[in-house]
Image (cartoon, rainbow, N blue to C red):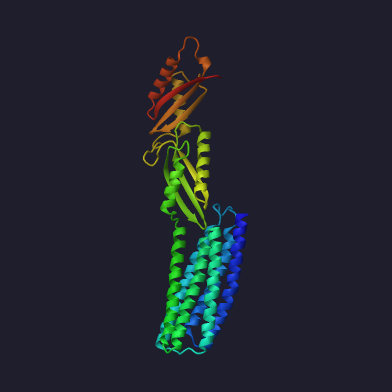
Length: 379
C-alpha cells in the first residue's frame, strides 16, 4: 500500500509539472523571440529541460517499483539513481549551451523590446515554479525520495533563474543592455551547479557509498544492545534509490545452537529496520569469534574431511562404536569436538574418566584438533 501511494503521489505531481513546464517553455521562447531577450529564451530552454527531466522521472517511478526478478534479484530501486544521473548529464549539456550562446550575445548585444510582455512571462514563471517546488518537495519528504527532491530543486532552479531573467530584462530596459546576456550566463551557471549536485549524489549511490556516519554509529549501538550479541564486528551500508541495504557481522557465544543463533539474527534484522526507516534489506552474519582479527578456518579441513579424519582415528583406537553423534566447533584456529555417548556405555565397570582419556588421546594425535568434551545421555 505504501509503495502504491508513493508511486501515485509521485506520478501526480510529476504530470502536473509536465503540464506547467510545457506551457512555460512555449510562452518563454515565443516571448523571448518577440522581445529579443536571450535571457528569456535561455530560460525557456531550461523549462524544456524540465520536460525531459519529468519524462525521466516518470520512467524511473514506473520501473523502480517493480518487484525483484531473475535478472534483478535485489529489485529495481537504482532505476531512480540512474535516472538522476541521466538528468544531471542533460542539464550539464543544456547549461553549457546557454553559456556559450550568451557569450556570443555579449559580443553582439540586442536591446529587448516588449518589456511588459517579457516581465509578465518571467513573473508567471517565478510564481508557478515556486509553487511546483513546494508541492514536489512535500511529496519527496513524505515518501523520502531523493529523486523527487532532485526534481523539486530543479523546479526551484527554474524559479531562481526566472528571477535572474526578470532582473536582467528590467536592467536592459533601463539601458544596461548587457544585463540580458549576463542574466542568461548566470542561468547557465545555475543549471551547471544543479547538474553537478545531482550527478555527484547519484554517482555516490552507484558506487555504493555508505550512509551518514552518525546513523551508522546509532545503528551499531542499537545492535550491540540486543541480548545474545557480544559485539558488532562489521557493519556496512549502502543506498539504493530511496532505500538502504546493510550487512552486519555480530559475534555471539560460540557454543550456541544453530537455532538460537538464527533467532538472534532475526532480532538483529528487526532492530536494524526499526532504527533506520529506509532500511529494507539486511544480511546478518553470525560469528562465533571476531573473524576480522582471527582466521578460525585457515588451513583447517572442512566438516566432511574433518569427520573422515576423526572417524578413521577413532576406528583405529577401537572407540567409535559407542558414539551417537559428533559436533565440531571451529574456534581459535582449531577444531574442538563434542562427543555424545549413550548412558549404556557406562557399564561393565567402564568409567567416564576412562572413556574421556581414550577419546582425548585419540584427538591429541591429530594436528588440526583441539579440546574435546564428552556428554552422556539417553539413547
